[in-house]
Image 1 (cartoon, rainbow, N blue to C red):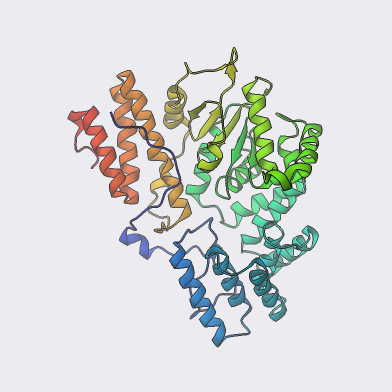
Image 2 (cartoon, rainbow, N blue to C red):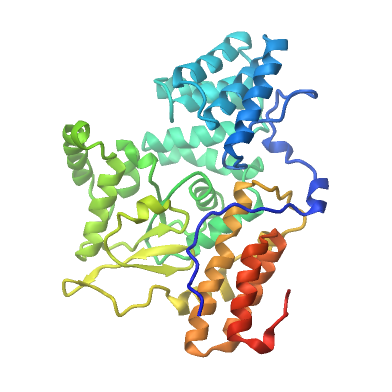
Length: 427
């Protein structure tokens, strides 16, 4: 029997021809771009290019700037391209954003770019960043990108109420298409009541927050982004009512400040370690999960056993001082029930969505066939041929739609090995 594949966000190799005719997502387009300019440097939320492609964008925008030195948006695009290509210093990239702002005080991309500096590179103050992002919204009211920054700024200030309208705006302005929202829905419904879910990046953090805020989907589940947890106010907001207390978080932060220069360990890593310890020793009343999108490097630091429940890895407590090895690594019954009753999967193969070869959203879809393969394996071990066929046929349909020929061959070979009478079905 073939090994169960590891859930991951993987690259997809093929673009179906009819998708090339799909209309662009106007809401995601920078408002200042003009015909004849190089391609937009889009957020990693939407697109992940190769290093060479980002270097090509750097060259293209640099050449455009030589001919159009007063173009504010060109300065912004060059800064973005350099960041993703790991080209130049933080000061150089920030300098391009400041130059864009000097050239055009009403350039939304310059305002948004500078506001985002407060969340990553540079030393811009949060109040100033908020003012710039709000001005970008005024100038480009249908453009959703500033709302990502404004939501994050509010959350890192520990102000969930102020973050709410920006979470709703991400849906209202079309920043979160159906495949992304459905993935977020499936992630949320995978959790047990009152759970804490640690997430990794933009596409597993913003969409669940938006669904919770606008549609009231599973408000009992607390999403905790590992990057944002490095900020004290955010950590208190998302973890301070369990499994940790505000006092414990402040104590951890004080100790971390004293030891950081020696250890180099991030504050978020210390917090995660304390949470895992509470789960391991049975002190946490809230279920704790890691999203399947969490980076492998983080997973390697989890000492206790994990159990796969839908799109989440559940952190399991010790029993009588030992890990609960008798439990399977996959909660088969729960995950099968989720696929049959709760998951929304139609958008993963939506012909109307403009899928692209390097789309980050498309990469997320690879988690479904990987998880379905796990379900199929569990069904085969139980002799449940009906559930095996259902899981494998659905996995094969999704993989075939997205054109991953290598994975398609692997899944078909496994299906044919377990169920020879089904050979060729759905191919």
